[in-house]
Structure formats: structure tokens, C-alpha cells
Amino acid sequence: MKTPALLLLLLCLIGCRSQEREIADIDLPLVVERLEEDLYALIDDAECRALPRIREKYGAFFESYNTGVIRAGESRNPLYCETVRRFLHHPVVDSAYRRVRQTYARPQPLFDELADAFKHFKYYFPDAPVPHIYTYISGFNEALMLTDSAVGVSLDQFLGADCPLYERLGKARYLRYNMRPERIAPLCLQTWINGEYPEPFGQEATLLARIIYEGKNLYALRRCMPDKPIEDLLGFRPEQLQWCLDNERTLWQHLIEERLLFVTAPFTIQKYAADAPFTPGFPTDSPGKAANWIGYRIVCRYLRQKNCNLPELMRLDNAQQLLKEAKYNP
Image 1 (spheres, rainbow, N blue to C red):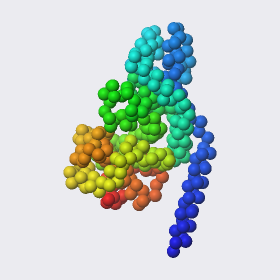
Image 2 (image 1 turned 45 degrees about the vertical axis):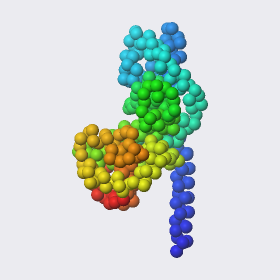
Image 3 (image 1 turned 135 degrees about the horizontal axis):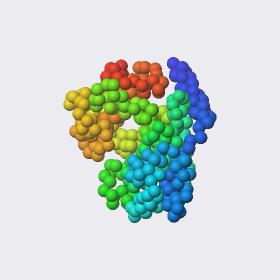
Image 4 (image 1 turned 90 degrees about the vertical axis):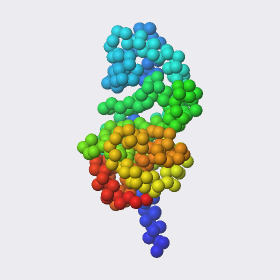
């Protein structure tokens, strides 16, 4: 009786290795550009002669950054260079940039992680485009930015949980934990997946719909970043993940008994599915957005019952039907 099980295990291992070889062979020259370095070089020149080249290099992303992130206005404005110069020379922004240069002096490991994640993405979503990745300084504003062709990441928002700048700015401890370089690749990929498969608005916006949506995204992230610990994909501390594992049934019963699954109040949905110090109704050692973990577990259970690929999964937009077919009962 043991031989067939061993044979099945060996076949699975061979299949996984073959799949990883296929992914490694994907020709995907991921473009990662450092906008913050180009801007600091730009303002060092009193005449800003490199501005046309930067405008061409970054395209529509550049103007979105100028108007939506740093509020400098469009780059063709005659006052643009002086406005950017004042922004970048602000003591807090300049201090953040110096720390960015130290933290990301050798960015190749991050670039490699991004390239590997998007190779997996291309393998599982062959018809989907792959973005350019642009890094920038935001002055602690927008951590991530999405356009039709690019994902932007504010490196001053990922300087490490113990960065003194964050404490001086009054960032909450639970937020600082996720302001780490390790979170960049998962968040870039998650942002792009969210753009390709936005939260469906054809159904009633309930807590169940939200956590199923987040659960599908987490499942896709796990497939695209198989070597990344799931707690890093969730943004949980290891002990918070263990709390979820130990309290899965209790958390699920709480959502049912308090009739929370079908609430539509945005404030209530945010309490359970968005960043928070802990989950309402549970001890402070619980993580915020623990309900999203339940959504992930429901999706995993569903995929034990149904055979579908990742694009098919991401297109599913009936949360109640998915829950019913998952037969989830922790």
C-alpha cells in the first residue's frame, strides 16, 4: 500500500521541478528604473537639461507621480524644476533619500526577486501584461502607485521597521512592521494583480465578498512566490500567523455568530479586512485583517473541490457560491 503513495509523491516532485524549469526559462527582462536617482541628478543641474529625457523615459507614469504623489504639477510647467528642487531639498525628504541610498545601495537581490515573481506571474497568467517597476521618493505619501503599464514603489516607505524616521513621524508600530524591504516584491505583485483583476462591483459589497477577494489574491501570490513565507505575503509576524492557525475555527464561528459575513457597512468591513493593530473581538495578539486569512482558507478549500487555473479563479465573482462549493467547515 505504501508503494503507490511513494510513487505519487515522486511524480509530484518531478512535476514541480519540471514546472520550475519552465518558469526559469521564461524570457522576461523585467524593467526596474530608479526615478528618485534621476530626479536628484536633474535638480543638481541648474538648467534641468535632462528633463526631456526623463519625461520620455518614464512616460505617463512620470506625470502621474508629479501631480498625484508629490503635487509638483506637470513637468512642462515653467516652475516645475524649482518646485521639485524644494521638495527634494526638504530636510525630511532629503534625510529619507540618504537612508534609501544606504538601504538600497545593492538592489540586485530585490530586482531578482521581482523578476522571479513576475516570471511566475507570466507562467500562470500567460495572456496578462507585465509592468515596468519604477522606484521613487514620495515624502512618505503614496507607498505604491499603479498605472496601465507600471507599478511604482516609494522606497522611503520601506526602510525597515526600526527606521527612526518612522517613529519620529508617528507611524504606528503595527504599520512600521510592514515598512520593510521584504514586503516590496509581494506588494508590487499584489498591486499589479489587483489592477488586472479588480474587486468585482457586480455583487453586493459584503465582508464575505471582500475576504474571498483577498483570499484569491493571497492564493495567487503564493503560487507566484512559492519560496516566500506566507506570513511575509500576509504582512503578519510569525506568531500572528500561528495565532490564525490556532484560532481558525474560533474566528470563523465569530464571523457567523455575529452575523458579520453579509454586512455591507464599509466601516465594519474595514475593521476586519484592512490593516489594524488586532482583530476586533479578539485578543491583542491577534493580527489585524485576520478575516482575510479565513478568505484564503476558504479559497484553498474550494480548490480542493474544483479544478480551475489561476485566471479562472480570479474571474470568479460570486463569493456566496464559492463559499457554498468550498464546503468550508474548520
